[in-house]
Image (cartoon, rainbow, N blue to C red; front, side, top):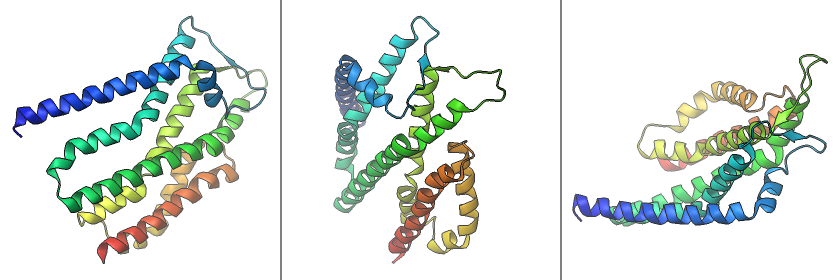
Length: 230
């Protein structure tokens, strides 16, 4: 294929992705009650969210529906991306690409699920009840709740990509298992700091809920890198 033929192929697949995302987003928009029952599930019982802008609830509905639609069609998006690059890969490279993308996708969903079911509920409970003074009452807005949930889910999903990133770096010869073992203590300090940033609750239990899985991913990454080196 020529350059322009590749460009036409890319444009065609992008249209497929855009159309699928729009259809999924419209479908999610139509099921507002079910969608927001999922979004509001981590919210502590008794916490009331408010809206202070005229258009904010509608815009929030659209934004959440869009992200939910992208999540629903994400396997199809990954398929279209792979279908575009697959003709230029060797058979072994295709198998490696499928493994990397598949494992990365599952790890991302695992990170999002951990945040949704465990980390975010503890975080919103702590921050929602935190007061600098008894004279200052917390009134949480809907947009603030949605933003924090989205950012924390994205961060945890990206953090859980560590094994895939280490595998890729090991494949190109940049990362060695001995290097990771040598700097294990430094990694623990970085992991604890990262966990403290993700969950600013000051609660050792919540901190460990984030730090322990990330450290487990570090150890898993060492095993993966060692296997690549063999």
